[in-house]
Length: 91
View 1 (tube, rainbow, N blue to C red):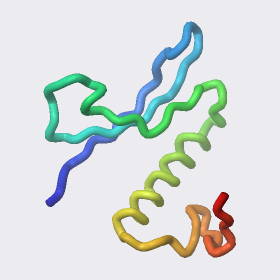
View 2 (tube, rainbow, N blue to C red):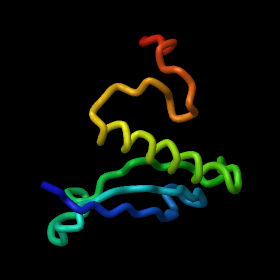
View 3 (cartoon, rainbow, N blue to C red):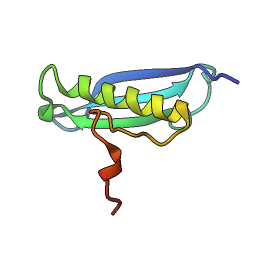
C-alpha cells in the first residue's frame, strides 16, 4: 500500500522577534481534524543560524538519504557523506 505524503517548509515567528524555519510532513489523504493530529514536525531551526545556500540544502540531502535508507530496509554501510558507518560508536 502506498500512502501519498506532503512535505511543507515555511518560516514562522515562534518567539517575539525570532524567526524559525520549519519543515513538516503530512498525509495527502487527510484534510480534516486538528492540525496537531495531521502535521508532523521534521525539524525547526532558528533562521539566524542559517548559512545561506547551505543549511536547507544539507538538511534536505540528509533527509533524502535517510528516506532512501528506510525505504531500502537495510542498515547503511556509509553515512550521508559517503563515510564508512562501521566506525560509528554508539553512546
